[in-house]
Structures are given as structure tokens and as C-alpha cells.
Length: 161
Image (cartoon, rainbow, N blue to C red; front, side):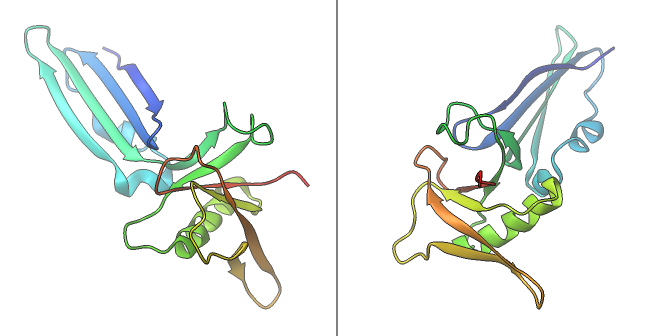
């Protein structure tokens, strides 16, 4: 028996969907949950289903993305780049979310992001947002608009210099 991946997609709303199936026995969730990107794990939801007549077992997992993605069909300067797609928590300010996403970006990529892209820039927002500051360094990102982004998400990226 082997598990087949029937679907593994990131939809236009920023949700990652996985659909797994196996004949003869339930799909064990633990090994698949371990493969979910670290920052997304607390957000995962699962569903088990069995087609009894076929003895076909399904496991579906979905979560709002907080993961590195490769950009396709975006602005020319972003095409082919790796970026961090990050869902903003409810009741969280954009500034707080950018700070968390910036720290996650440096954790995953080992470099600081230089831009935080959002669907639309809120009225009164500053051009830059401080991601990290201590006695020795200050890291700020430029806040930019990318209307194609899903609502409630940030895209952290490094702009070419």
C-alpha cells in the first residue's frame, strides 16, 4: 500500500490544499502533518473520509499559507523569485504581521527581506516598516502594493538592488 498525492495546490485565496488517498488502510496523518511548513502547522485542518465499497481512504489537509512560494505570473521583477506568503492573523495589525513575517523570512532564507507587499496599502501607512532593531542594526522593509495578492496576506521578498 502506498499513499497517492491527488492534489497539492495553493489556491488564489492563499489556502494550501492537499488530498491524499490509499487503498486498504487509512492514510496516517502524522507523517503528512510533519511535512507542513513549520509556521503553518498550528493552522492545519484535516478531514478523513472512506469510500467503503472501494476500501479507498482519503485524507485532506488545508491551511492558510505561511510558507515560501515561487512566484509565477506576477510582475516581471518578481517572476521566478522565492518569497514568503504570510497570512495576517485576525486582530493583528499590519505592522505586527510584517514583523513576524520578516523574522520568519530570515529564519527560512537566512537573509532579511527588503519589501513587504500587500494587496492595498492602508491609509496613513508609512513607506517603511521596521522588522527588527537592536543596538547594532535596524532592519526595515519597504511597504508596496501588489493588487493580485489574496486579501489578508503579505508577501515578503528581496528586491534586486
